Image (cartoon, rainbow, N blue to C red):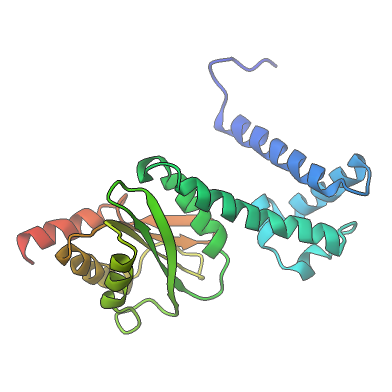
Length: 230
């Protein structure tokens, strides 16, 4: 069967991407063993964990259950996550936010998607929307009793930020914001508005999933409420 040059289904794209991903993993695991053995190990990994994200976030104990994997090879697999974090953070420094939103979400997913506790982060950008830094503010349940807008404002001002993005994770795996998430984000939005720092988004990370307050119209609702003096 021939595939048209002008049309490749989403499934074809997924298969091509997965094949390339597995090829890279096999290459990384081939040190000291034949490529055929490395391919066999890779097949077992993907049968058990399904994708690279799950593989690099699996515990060392889980990975060592895969026949053929040694502590050295597990170290190589775990290093992939660190390399991706380094690459994605540094890629954010290159251009403006509009071109790097996808990289930011990928970084947040890798960094916080598998955590068993909630963590809240502040991502800061300068007046030209160039990335400054990602600051992990605290761990714990996200509510008005644990988040102090003044602390966020002080951190943003100390870094010279003109724009910020808020982010926290949901260990439950459910990306939808809670009532508390929406309420505290509005309080934070208003605090930043008062000092002329714009909150661009609040991104919730839940495993491989994410939820954007901006994409779902919530940030615009805050803006309208502030302008209306509500």
